[in-house]
Image 1 (cartoon, rainbow, N blue to C red):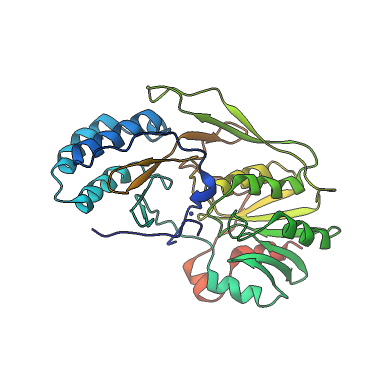
Image 2: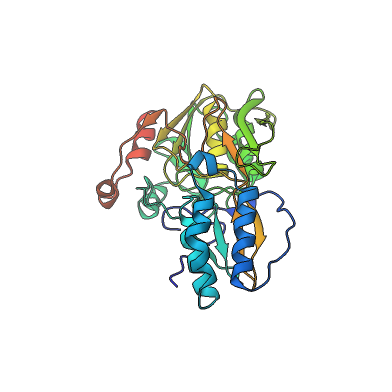
Length: 339
């Protein structure tokens, strides 16, 4: 079986989802028996009860059972069984639906092929023009062509801590404009993302809504719960902010982008985000395997579903593979030209 692995905190090829902070507390469920019929029925039933996007994605889950259960039950070994399960789950086109092997390796069930408007090697060339302060992988700050520039590579404390961000922002308190680049950020801890967003919120922000599955029918959901971002810190930055986004942006990073995009001084620039938000729970198969299930639907403040749709930029900045091959970053160049 061909396996595609990714680092948990890295939402790899196009995107690696930082699942350590994306999910909530997983429900308790018994581990099924090792026979393939029991494993399949347990997984299918768990998705039937918990998965949030059947209606949105127009998935006939009963048809999936009819098509894949006979093949799964007839599998020759656990790896062959997992291959059938992965093929079935690929129909969900859901970046948060993952399989994990007994060693903790993560297997994507779906991998988008969208062009990503960020290239690490080219980005590093730009960063090398600054006196760069690194906070972690793809994260840090510096002054680029006279403009304060922040890169936030993921929403986890290995990439950015609020104290470090606050100290850097303090240096640029009077700057007329700053650039925040999250094109490389696949998600992580949305609490951390909202703490950073709070430095740009003079008043409480409505950051959208979420609804959780709460019944046996695929249309059974609880009432919408409002997500808010509150002001944080001794002052809020109210100068111009150019927030650079693209198709690698997913999950809690999209929540951050939605919150920031509500501010009149923030311009979203680049490309549409990927559209992947889930609050996944983790459930057991047999023999040490586990899988994740998306459990909520997240909406923008104007009630648009983020999953599959993404967040559109205010300014679409064209970029191509040829641009990056030539050593140019059109999105960052555009932002620098606005100063």
